[in-house]
Length: 268
Length: 258
Image (cartoon, rainbow over all chains, first blue to last red; front, side, top):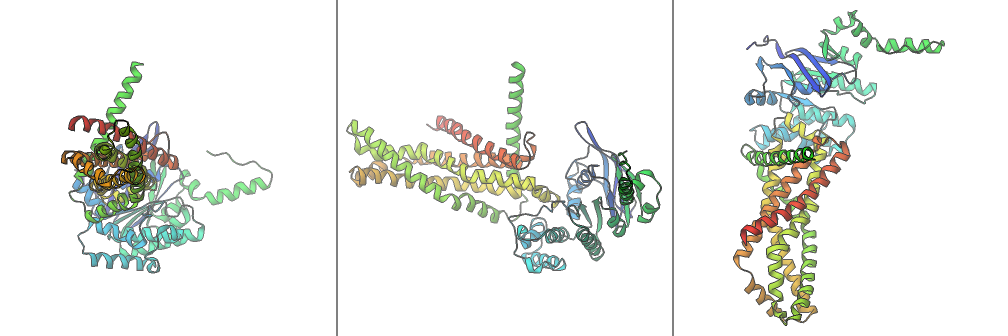
């Protein structure tokens, strides 16, 4: 069995996924170095979330290999999968907080259910996670009583309380205004450095991703079209990369053309 | 026509197999499930304390009606003194377990299916799985165990209140001596009848709660409806199928035990 280089915490090779006749992923690869913050970019509907769910073992891939810390994750190896789940956390786009539990109970739950820690230790670690995310004033609030940003922080507190080595973020800034988008990326970058976990973020926010990430990947038509540093992404002359990267410039050009009586350019 | 029947039969067999596996896996999840006792207590509270009012009210009215109907039928044969026997055997053998189960399906079962459906749609169940928590062990196992314990208790309460209802009808309204009523109850009900009552109650509890959990937990597999409609469809299916299952299981158990 081929093992991933030790510097890679996660290595994805040739993942395929289809829903009926709809091919979403067709041989997608991704390398995630240990301790890095990797962002997967792509247009809406290109299968970014499906890709992340295949990585997180929530959705089975049709084909392909996922290596975590050099070990191949397969359906027939529950021990490796259990270890992966213990060392990995997933942040859902919807936060997926337990709406019948308070903030403190939400954060306690993964420790109560997966660790052998004593009740006092669980309480201490949960309070510490909530304090670090500035939620100590809302221990007994239900998620529905919290703002969107607070819910996001609560979801992050729940994700980091188990001290994972890998955290997967599914569209953490979806539906947020630019200021809040910046705040969320800043929060992820801050805690990624503070806690030292490896992060994979799926998003379509180019500027924020380029500013916060160590590596950037671009998913297009089911394949990873680009993988590299933000600097390499910024300098790339590839047509797909430039069209995605310079979408704001393209919008300005199209609007200027419209103001001067021209027609809008067609897609593709 | 043959093709249609074949397809329906295969769907039914697949559904039954899937339901059986779901229930089996939920019981298997007892091993390795953490803080199970606390969650059984919480599920017991939902199925027990929260459903008490409906059990008490329906039990009382069932007894009152049985007392009235029974009295007028027995009166034709001059056997009013057997009213206690009629009410008690009707309640203990049939009406108690069946009506209590139907009431619990209506209140606790529907709430359960809807809650699990919403948890599925809002990815709370997927979140549990990403944490490495066995979602069946966490969400389903405690509810199944609680049902096996709580349904017989609720049924016993239903029967007791029903007997008091029959006594109220017979003694206060229709003039039968309370002593005559209660001694007829005592003479009529044998331990075998009580056993039958509890066996039925525990079986109905297990089957209906498992079925309601099954539909709620698998809300996302419904291809015809998604989102809020999917939850609504799962809840409706859970309640309708559970109600039918109670009556079908009642027939099977009665035919074995009588």
